[in-house]
Length: 119
Image (tube, rainbow, N blue to C red; front, top):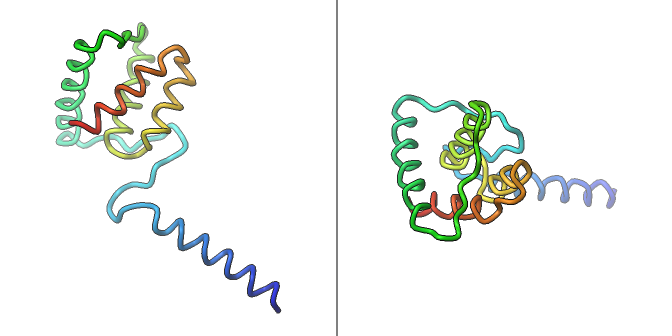
């Protein structure tokens, strides 16, 4: 009996913790690369913010531009930034996914993650 109540408390407590981890109306951060595509209005807001972030990198002497040469690499990077901007992933998930593909650009992914919080 005590074991069942203890199990119930643990499961119930875990459910409460996970239930309080996201803000109502906000998508929960995902751990996969799927993302919810933007509406035209969101696309424009994201683009405006992305331009501000890109412009801010030009004034940072420590920022080294990543070589995104193929259309697939450019699309991957844009989708990753959109998922961060739209709060589909956390700042740490953004940095982890970025540095997994471009390990020599940890500074740049941190810079971008911080810049999105400013704009």
